Amino acid sequence: TQLLEQSPQFLSIQEGENLTVYCNSSSVFSSLQWYRQEPGEGPVLLVTVVTGGEVKKLKRLTFQFGDARKDSSLHITAAQPGDTGLYLCAGAGGGGADGLTFGKGTHLIIQP
Amino acid sequence: EAGVAQSPRYKIIEKRQSVAFWCNPISGHATLYWYQQILGQGPKLLIQFQNNGVVDDSQLPKDRFSAERLKGVDSTLKIQPAKLEDSAVYLCASSHRDTQYFGPGTRLTVL
Image (tube, chains in turn yellow, blue):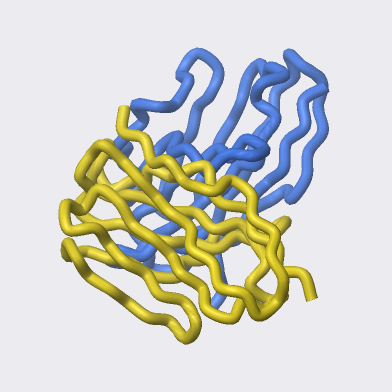
């Protein structure tokens, strides 16, 4: 069974601060995705990283895929209250077919 | 473009009862997934369909869970009989290329 470990599990910071969340695995994935989920809603895809060492930016969010394609990080610059939510990483190409293997997520709260 | 639709949004049942969830994927999406998300955890894949065929059901507890997608469009997920540990949000997703689009989920509470 392939597992994705996310850390920290919970994070509460003040508006304007920077933060990084991590997603680690002992297995190699063909690609890794980051999702954001709000209460009462399904996860929404933020980004897909495919190539080892790849870095993608989405406004204030920077995503990095490790060289060995086993880990990833999400860095948020100048966090805003609207960034509050559950951030999930998910690996593809690990289990059967192309169903995703999700981590447990990082609960992020940005206080105004 | 309409998103993935799920119903009901909430369901409360007693243990040993039966329950069914319905999913209507985005039009044209051939692949459909059911995930179970227990409180405090990430979603776990239960079953994946390609059109009306099952691609992966390795994590589906087949003694009590069943799913079908008879015409390759809508899908239903059934639990019979339900146990307390089945309390969770059941998410349906459909995909186009490499992107999965999730519905809002059905929150099931088993008492």
